[in-house]
Amino acid sequence: TGSAVRNKNIEAEVMANYCIKAGIPADKLTLEKNAQNTYQNALFTRKIMKARHYRTGTIVTSDFHVHRSRFIFKHFAQDLQFVAAPFPQDAPLPLKYYFMLREKLIIWYLCLLGDKKYHRASSLA
Image (cartoon, one colour):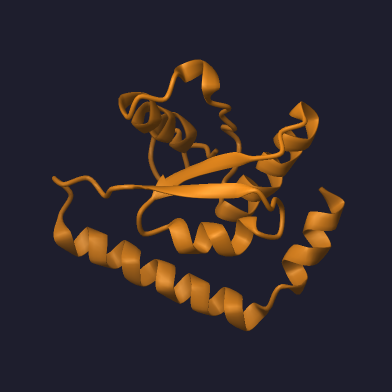
């Protein structure tokens, strides 16, 4: 799930390619290419799951993003497992640290914000 947010790469396609390289058949993947953030990822994923009567799913995301994904997705779907795709080995180390720190700050902010936002929105999905 996810569109091209900060670059030209559609996030759903990047993660689908990761899954295919890991041996998952392409016909077993469902992609959502419109979400602009993790909240929309969860919201749009729930809509797809309801429409197709899916009860379970696997969310593949970057290793630094797994915790925030779990925090948000738990309000939209229950039977999900999460797989962490490793950060590219050729990426600069400061970039990895930037993303790790950014995720910690966002999770901290979401904890301060509380779950009310997600409970209200998930009931509308």
